[in-house]
Length: 484
Length: 74
Ligand SMILES: Cc1cc2nc3c(=O)[nH]c(=O)nc-3n(C[C@H](O)[C@H](O)[C@H](O)COP(=O)(O)OP(=O)(O)OC[C@H]3O[C@@H](n4cnc5c(N)ncnc54)[C@H](O)[C@@H]3O)c2cc1C
Image 1: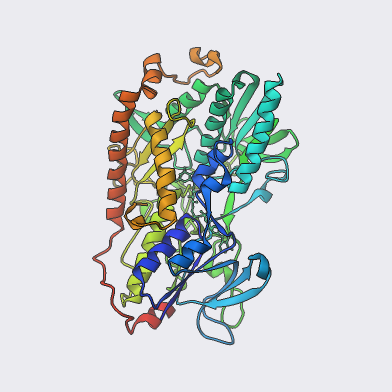
Image 2: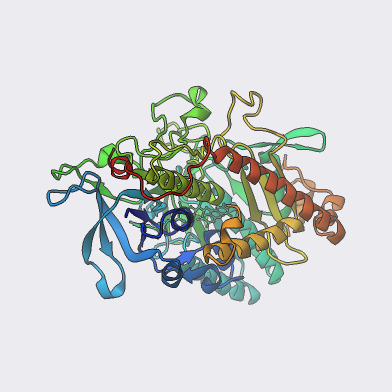
């Protein structure tokens, strides 16, 4: 009997756990450790944040589903890895701290044969003073954050109905943020809702981003064939904003937020201030902090984790200039080079370098997006890691299945207003996610498989995906047939 | 909506959609066709990405092999 422990029950961890259960022997144990009792379909938090959905529509309790599918669930957070075992026992173990209210604070070590780290990001609001819920800005990163944001949004709308003018600020709250696509989705949905509620004329909306130009999305932008031209994503993104009367500031690093004003510096224009009545700024991500110890108790955190807190895997982490970055630098199996039974999936793995060109301003402040790891690659990595572990438990020595972000594409739908008849969304595909200039010398990507368009059809697809992925996550009949 | 944006005064350099483009974005018959087309396009990407995931064949699901412990501790 073997035990596979999965840390995290988000898109990557939940997918990995579900496939492990499907592919492992019944005698083998699959254990999921996650600090929250619920699964959250994070992409739909955008709609919660403008009051179109409630938290219960984007979350569900994990325990009954895991119980039904014979997956052991422990509501706890992982705090340390003991990949060589400890003084008492030689088997690798993970140390957890329970968050289940009845056992809160209790610590325990769980032995494992294989471990998947799918702990996602630490929402690093502390990187910018005054940033985040409970301080001066709002967020939609969790369902609770999004509900609190919707409440403030409702209050703003009520005051605008009474004739007040309001300033809205949305975007990212630090020069090293990722997830610009989510911030963009939020701001266009906010604008759409203000129009739907009849108060658009009372609102001034600004988007603040660390991207060098609009449409970069942390992917170094993309090119699309349209109207007889090969057109950069900047053109479409600026058009989307201009059409909706949303102002934007690019190349910005938010230094601090005080009540009602965000202070930022840019790559080229020095300093600026963005005043607001309501601000939704996403935080930068770092790895979920975890320690690692050798058998003798020596701290080996730096062997397993990068300084950012993300886990080192089979990537080429050698420091190189932008021109020398290669598709082959990106990991393929997500296995730790230090311990062969340790894998990372989803946001938890350390990328070898950004995708967008690194840029710093005259004071040496880095202002460029970190690489995005969206839902589709996160789930595909989770599934691939599960497949390899199942194979290795069956006697295969080395992982044979791969899920490099430089070899896979992504399909993504960004809502631009939710209404079954008047709503729209930008549907996008890119192939591959990480540009490969050796295979596609001109644009880094296959233009036959990289496209984007805005329309009502995209909104229908977004709704379909919401229901389909929640169905899949609930592990209802036929769940495994739904692709990641 | 800020009408100034349409003539580019507030957003110089930004491309803005024509009336025809805006109309087609929510014109039901056209959007039904696009719905089918975009889905096919996305399925193609998904299929291509999944193809890339598979290694040199999968091992069948047998009982626990003798290499298990070794695999787990290498
Ligand atoms: C607002 C927003 C909108 C987005 N929209 C889209 C979209 O439209 N399309 C798209 O493709 N992607 C979107 N994304 C990105 C997508 O949500 C991520 O790619 C995806 O959630 C990553 O999956 P993950 O499993 O790596 O991390 P997560 O989903 O964040 O899961 C991490 C899990 O680890 C758990 N955990 C945390 N700490 C510990 C610990 N110490 N021990 C154990 N478990 C722990 C967490 O509770 C959670 O269960 C969006 C992201 C945001 C923030």
